[in-house]
Length: 523
Image (cartoon, rainbow, N blue to C red; front, side):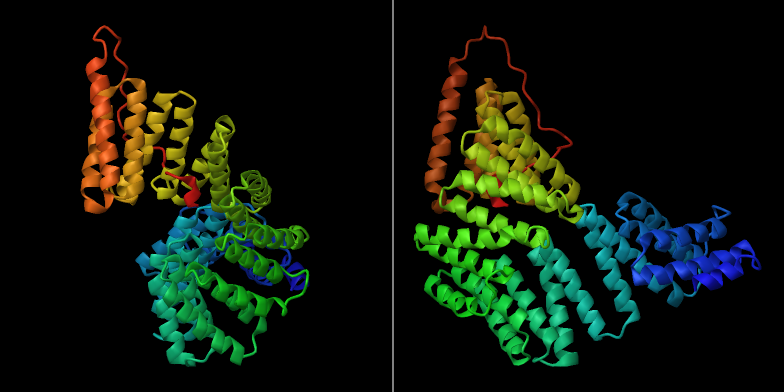
């Protein structure tokens, strides 16, 4: 093909060479072996087809999509986004003008939307990427048969994308749709249905509906066993043990894990995952020495896998650190998380995970009294998660709440009040004013204003705390009484404040909050 192109250069005009360059570039991109060469042909096609910047055409849109794909493979994500956004605008215009067949436009539009999703994910903008994946599904719904297998797979892909950002509620309908399609097309005992059920089990676990999760897991394992898919079955067995642990069935979980550990190689990642789950079950039984031994075995295996499977190892380290945290081994937990962070920094697609790890390090440092060290980790976490999920995400609110706690500990009540105000404002929207974490943020805000000597504002927010606890009824009587006690104390302090003292400048709630969050241990 490349030799034929060389022969063409002497006999064809630039536009024809541009179209040939596009064809060769697409072929190279499909093979995926040389993105530099693919980009070179795409760039030549662009120069030939884009001489008039205002003119739109299907070949030009295809060229822009190819440039976006090549830049993505070269990890030039900003350039990729620019080309793909222009291609998307051009295809929209072509569709509106009716100058091209919709059947010709849709496959290219799907490719553009999929590349946009991949690029945004690589840049850590996962929430935005979900919008592009939904558009991909909508295009497939318009072009494929109603219950085609491919449409089932597209629904499952979108469900998995929602699960990746822990949005289990949104994932549910797409997973159920995939299951419905695959059952009709392939039958209850198909591999695709088994994969759908395993994902559905993960979703139910995320929603804390563990009995339903176990039911789906059992159905999935039965099919996987019948098909002899040992690797998938092993992971499903580990899932089952983790669900049993969530249900408090620790002995059952340990027996499940003992039965599958013999099927693994001594240095395999699966073996490490089994020991991590075993440690969790033992920890719940307060058998801490045995639990730590299991975690040490897992870490010894994972240590050798960091270079070849960095993401899987990082995820395992996060789970291990949480178990050490449960056993009050905070220094070990922090060390593991810092190791995890250094690994995630090298994976662009995992900015959200890096932010969560940074948030957790900050939380643990705060918990262990290392307040000054905690602040940069919390600030970095807030910025990362804002980039990934937007400034109104509840996770950001928890981080800002912890920043407020850190500033208050350092006797900086004005900075603390700013952080608590942002946290409360986001939680009011994302969690609702009656949520316990929102009430806690409001309580913290009252405390910060009290520390500043701004008693009218402190009293105002403390009254909001009381109103919120009253809305919870008898179950929160202890919290209500404590809130009322604090209010009386604030009133006494306000009454006793000297009128000769200079007024402390109150900090109003920010109109455009920068971000927010509560207990970073939620991550």
